[in-house]
Image (cartoon, rainbow, N blue to C red; front, side, top):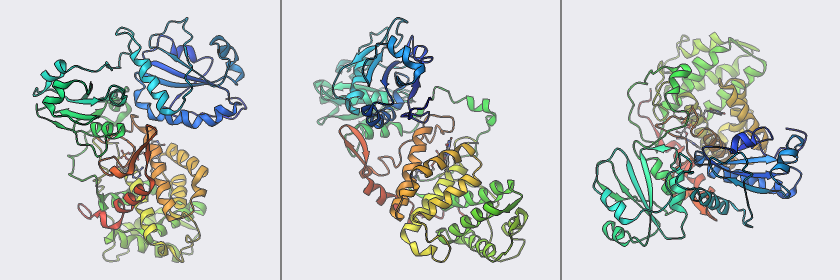
Length: 526
Ligand code: FAD
C-alpha cells in the first residue's frame, strides 16, 4: 500500500486495482467497469473519495453487470500502468465495456458532473451502449417494453412476479430498479414508458413513475409505495414473498462449509415489527452458558468486563421475569464478591440455580424467534446480541438515572463502551470484534448523549449489513438490507439529489418505539 495516505481500503465496497490486477479485471470481463484513476496526493481526489465510496455502495448490487474500481497512480508500482492507460490528470474516470479486448484502454468520461446521480446514470448508459451480443451476461435488457409485449402477460400464471415500472421518457428509475434487482430471483422488472397508452388504459395507470405487479398466480395489482422513489420500489420488490438474493457464490455452498443440510426446526410465526423477549433471553442464555464457558476462570480485565456487562444488563434489562431477576442476582453477587478470580463453575451454579433462590432461572433451551434462521448456522446468537444492545441503548435513553451508582454513569455512551469491551473480550467471532473495535475507535468518542448513542449503534449496524449483504452469512430468507425498511418506517427514508438519505430524526423516533419496552413481546418467552 506504500506510504501515502490510503483513500480506499479493502472494506470499501469497490475493487482496489493495481498494476497487476487492472488488466485481468477489465479485459474480457463478464461485466462492464468504471474505474477512477486517482492520486492520493491530489486534494480534489481526497475530497472526492467519500462521494466515490457512496456511489460504490449505492450500486453494489449492480456488480454482475458493471463494477466500480479505483487505482492509485501515486503508488510507484502503478506508474507504468497509469502511463499505459494514458492518465494525465487526476481523477480520470474510464469505463470499459464487458468483454473488452486486450488492446482496449477504456473510454474517458469527460462530463463535468461527478455527483453520484450523474455517474450512476452514466453507468446505466454504458450498459445500454452494449450491443445485444456484448452485453454482460447477467444484465437484462434495459430498453422499455411496448404495450403489445406486456399486455399478453396480464392474467398469466408464472413462477415469478413481474413488476412493470411505468415512467416518463427522461426517467432513469426503471433501469436503476432493474439493476437493483439483478441479484434477486423470483421477480423480473420490466420498464415501459408513459406514452404506452394501451397499457395505461388497461392497467389504469395515471401517475409516473409507478409500479404494477403481476403475481405468480395470475392476479395483478398496483404496487403500493408510500413514496415513488427508487429505494422504495427496490426494497418493496426485494421483500415480496419468495424473492431471494441469489448470491453468485450460490447457496448450496453452505453444505460445503460443513453446516450440512441440517434444516432448522419448523419456523415459528413472528412479526418483524416487534421485538421478542425470547430473543433477549436466548442471547443471555447463549452468552452465559456457551460463550462464557470457554473461559474457565475470569480474572483481571476479563472479570471487570464481565461485571460491567452484568451490571449494565441488570439495570437496563426491560424484559423482567425470571431472567431479569437472575441478572440482578448475578449482579449483586458479583458486586459483593471480593474475589479477583471467579471460576466459571461458580457462575454456572448460579445459572443452574444450584444455590436455590426461588424464581431465578434461565431457560434451558435456546429459542430464537425474531432471530430464527432458515438454516442451522444462520442468524441466531449474533442477531440476538445486536437486538439486546439496541434495546439497552433505547432503555438507557428513556431512563438515564438507571445507571446511577454503578460506576458506569460517568460515560457519555455507557452501553456502547460496555458493548465494545464485551465484544472485544468475549464475542466468539473474532473478525466481528476487530471490525467493531475499529469502528468504535474511530467515532464512539464523538457520541455525546443517549440519543446519539441510539443512533450510533443503528448506523454502525447498517454499515455491517451493507458489508455483509449477499455474503455467506446472509440468510436468503432474511436478506440484509438497510434497516428499517420502508415498510417498517416510510418516513425514515428520503431522497436528496437522486440519492437515498435517512431522516435521522424519524429514525430516532422509530428506534425508540421499535426497541422500547412497550414493543417487547412476551410471546414464546420463559
Ligand atoms: P442482524 O444483522 O443480526 O440484525 C438483527 C436484527 O436487528 C434484524 O433482524 C433487524 O430486526 C434488526 N436490525 C437490522 N439492522 C439494524 C440496524 N441498523 N439498527 C437496528 N436494528 C437493526 N458478521 C460477519 O460476517 N462479519 C462481521 O464483521 C460481523 N460483525 C459483527 C459485529 C457485531 C458487534 C455483531 C453483534 C455481529 C457481527 N456480525 C458480523 C454478525 C452479523 O452482523 C449478523 O448478526 C449475523 O449475520 C446475523 O444476521 P441477521 O440477518 O440475523 O441480522
